[in-house]
Length: 319
Image 1 (tube, rainbow, N blue to C red):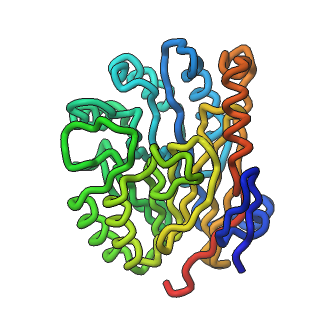
Image 2 (cartoon, rainbow, N blue to C red):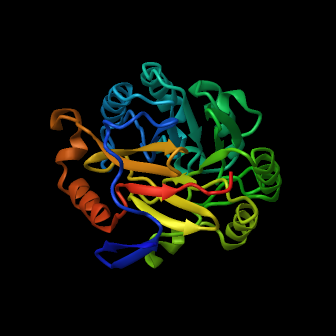
């Protein structure tokens, strides 16, 4: 039965049930971490002044987890014009991460003219296990027995310039995704992309997926029920929303306060994907944003709008 999820502005209707399983139970087939909206920057900016400290503490927290993969769903960086200053520092910190990790591009990563040049630069310098080994910023990677990650690029508008915050999904990417999901029809597929194809609240419509591209993505996913979860970011709040056969899991923005990410346990034996939020403890002396009143007020508002911090999704019965 579908559960009603209370929020400050009403309810959300989606099949998210109960609480996650206790950590003492048998290890799931696949366990992954979802991290989004880091907004990394080595400069002390008014809004995001402590990127390196937040990232270093997050890497340490992830290393303490028993994980098969870490998925970063975009906005790794705050200012695309600073990539040549910030990306090397980001990559240096990420060398300490002991788990395989995968990246989807967000609008803050590549926004501007000649966005393809930024994507090529990041693909070469990040050294993750996805974009650096693929000819495209959308790609596929096996992450466990019978479980595959498919990463999409929602900054792909079919052109070289990306001059908007909106999400896009081109014809060429749709053709690739349709073929890849057909190829993986007997497996469980986890999708990862930056922009959710649905917005949590109507007032956020200016940030949403463009309507034609949203319909294009929906047509593809309606043909494939074996992709039950979609990891997204962009809104900096936790949410779970329905789209085609998929549960859209918008993650809390790591840069917000408290700094959070989610753990997903994929349990085919019980037909469930369970999830829970984890908080990264960062001393106030290492994070100027943690003590800024404006940052705390913004994060408190986003936290109040959030829902579905933990629970579970059901895997499709026919596998």
